[in-house]
Length: 211
Ligand code: MD6
Ligand code: FE
Image (cartoon, rainbow, N blue to C red; front, side):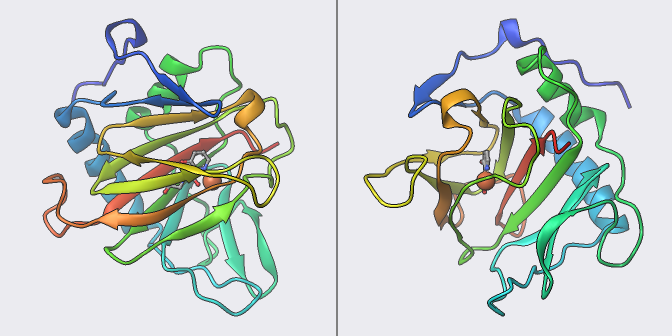
C-alpha cells in the first residue's frame, strides 16, 4: 500500500478553544479508513482491555496502545508500561498516525505513546488531566474517528466553568502550552453519527511524549 503523506499547508486551520487547537475535518474519509485498518492490526496483536481503577471501578472505555509506552490501569494504579497487560511489547506506531504528529507538530519530540480508546454508545471519560508524562513542554495530539463525541474542557484546576464541543470523525485536537494541564473528558457519544465503523462506536487516538 502507498505511504500516506500529510501536508499541513493544504489542510484546515485550527480553531482555538481555551488553548486547545481544534482541527475540524483534518483527515479525509480515505485517510480515516486507512488509519482504522492500521488500528485493526494493532488490536489483533494487542487486544483492547477494560482498565480497572484503584477504586475498583471498571472504565467504560476499552483501551490498547502502540509505541514504546502504553497506558495501563490495574489494582496497583495507573501508569505507562512498556508492555501490554499480557506481557508482550506494544506494536509500533503506524506511519499513518505518526505522520499526523510530524505534519502538525514539526518542532515537537517524536511521540513515544499512542493510546487507542474505544467508546461504545454508553462509554464516557470523566474529567481528568494528562499529567503522567515527564515533559509538559511537549503537546498531546488526539485524533477522533467514528461517532461524534462531546468533549468537555475546564481549566487547570478542578471546578469552575467548563465548555464543550463535538469532536467528529477526522478531527484532530492539540493540547499544548497553557492548555496542557487543563481538565477535559468525554461526556457523551452520539451513536449512529458516522458511517466509518459498521458497528458504530468512537475511537480516539492520543499521541504523547512520555519521558
Ligand atoms: C477522547 N481525549 O477524546 C479523550 N487528552 O476520547 C483525551 O483525553 C485527550 O483528546 C489529551 C489531549 C487530547 C485529548
Ligand atoms: Fe486526556
